[in-house]
Figure 1 (cartoon, helix red, strand yellow):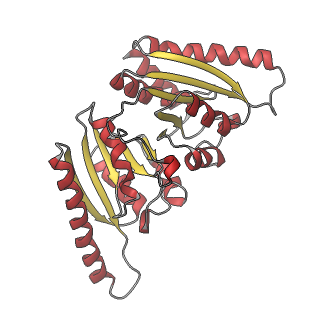
Figure 2 (figure 1 turned 180 degrees about the vertical axis):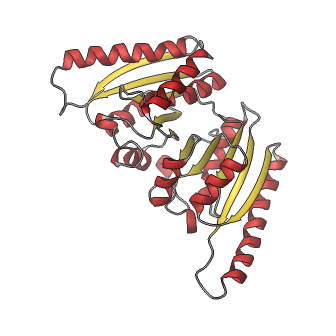
Figure 3 (figure 1 turned 90 degrees about the vertical axis):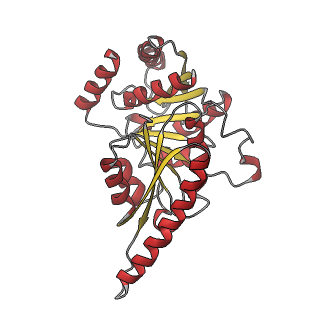
Length: 299
């Protein structure tokens, strides 16, 4: 999953906030980076000239970032394309056979609304590979530790809801946990507004988590199983803080309280309030999800 990572940049410091998180991965894996910048043509009679100038400026910017990373021993290439940010990113993912996209949740210009607006929704709806979303830390009380770039990803938080779709994130979580010899915290949140028989639902949730934990046990990965009750966003954030989560891994759809996981209010709130990177895996049709999970179990 992390063999070749596409990194969209737009020239802003905000967008570059994803790079320290990527370097955490590079300390454990010899991944290849593909830096991408989309140049959106200006709607004017001089659009060709403006696009040429913008393209040249974009190339110079990416070359500077590439050169900096290259000096650090990173395998990195860069690419500038003219078009919409979403289309450019997806095309590069396909053409380069990328295995993951990593980006900051905000940027300027064409990528400004990347994970909070229509571009993000389109990207996460169509991306065939997982997306690592990082919210920049600008305030003093949220500034990450000085060793953030080298700190291993030890604790992975996986909020699941009992559906095949929510479990689709497990193969990606297994890879991260194995790479860093980490621990997986599996979380089910019971919605008090929809709970009719709490004892029965808690028992079902515990059995479900135990079934998922066996996937990690086979890989020798430690697990912690949690069943909480309350608001999904609050419980996810509280669990992430209490257990020191280094990464929150989710699928783009689920049911019940996590039913609008990426395009809806739950993940928007998680992205807005969490100081933890978020790994998003696009949900597929249930039949495809079951086939992928079955394939992962056979490995």
